Image (cartoon, rainbow, N blue to C red):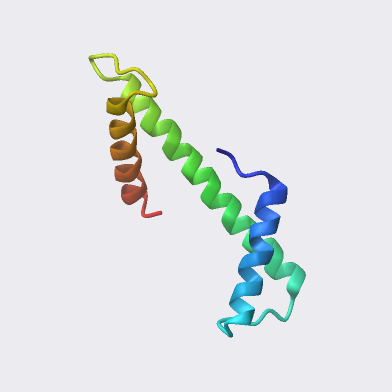
Length: 90
């Protein structure tokens, strides 16, 4: 599922507010902090989407056809997805 720009913006605000509330960070330039948080979240969403495509492609290349939505497909998807996330250090 692709995160929309409004959702990324909302998450950025929540993240910054939580960091400030806990005293873990201060942001002298709020707009710049918001832009940076949005960029980081958007970058992670892009990377996660690429990993999703990778896992789906890997399943489709198996010698036997595995039906999407089935238990075996879900297990393989989760396995390949997690392996690629680990490999990319996300």
